[in-house]
Amino acid sequence: MPRNQFQRMVFAFLTVVVTVHAYVFYSLYVVNGTVLMSVTGQHSVLSAIHAQGGVYMFGRMFPIWAVILVEFCIAFALENLMGSPYSFKLACKVFDPAKNHPMLFETAIICATVGLMCPAMSLIAAFLYYPYYEGFNIFTLLANWLKLVCFNFPFAYFTQLFFIQPFIRTLFKLLFRKDIQNREKEAHALEAQGKSLRPSNEQETIADIAKRVAEISAKMRELKK
Image (cartoon, rainbow, N blue to C red):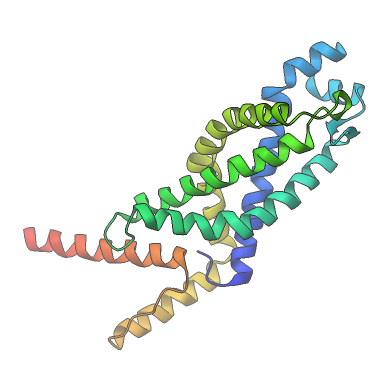
């Protein structure tokens, strides 16, 4: 998993790229697709978007690629400034990485990230997609924010936990497999000397805990024999 700032940025980049595309598809096709087709009289969502001149955002119509670009920039900034660092701190307040199962702790980090990012991105979306042509009302904005959270949170939770994060972690391991292998060799060399390689971040902490749990389980099985 990420062991330096560059790798953390790459990990965040991959996560946000997949997540933003998934959210735009979910918003346009699943949440608003029927409305778009009924308003424009088209038989497909893509045709409806073209018929109305793009996707409404911040008082005007934008092409889909522009919407994706805007949401990507915002989500990438939030992920690096808030989502990634604070999700680990929140997870540590509930679970102890030294005592709880690594999978449970990693799941807590993902859940904390969703709990932070979903309301934040939904609030930004409430501003971006607010119907400014009808005037501005703070209560309408708050109502739209609550509606977006209700729509987005279940989608965010299940996709991040069961699809996006497993996929991103697998892809990350493929991209940095040489670095991971070198890291493992370095750890084995230090273990041979009676030393241990100290984890440099929360991801390596989880991996280190998982390794120690596996070693303890193996010793317990040997004792039972």
